Image 1: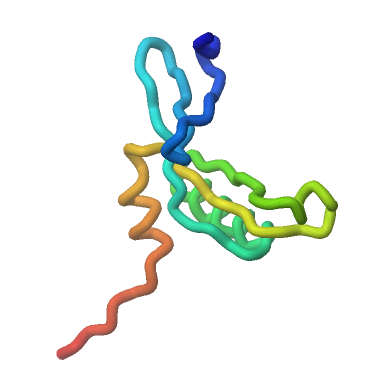
Image 2: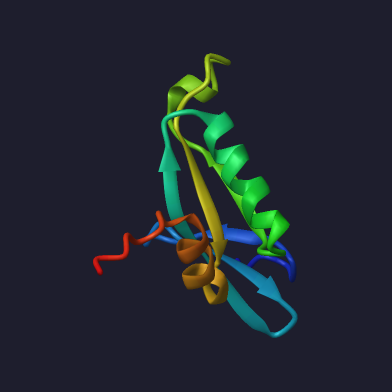
Length: 94
């Protein structure tokens, strides 16, 4: 059964597809963090640049309310912009 328009569904590749109108847009994981607060900080940085993102809680510790690892995902077309924004600045070798 296919999800209704606007709902997300899990795929075997670890990505999630969001149905928008007649086109599909994939969510791609750009960073995993050991703590949720780090993922929330990254999400705020992305939001400041108008890059849609979401946080996925990973593992059992999340369900036990003791925190745990999280993954930050962005839409597939925004992946390179988000990765460049989160990368460390390059040193000038000259």
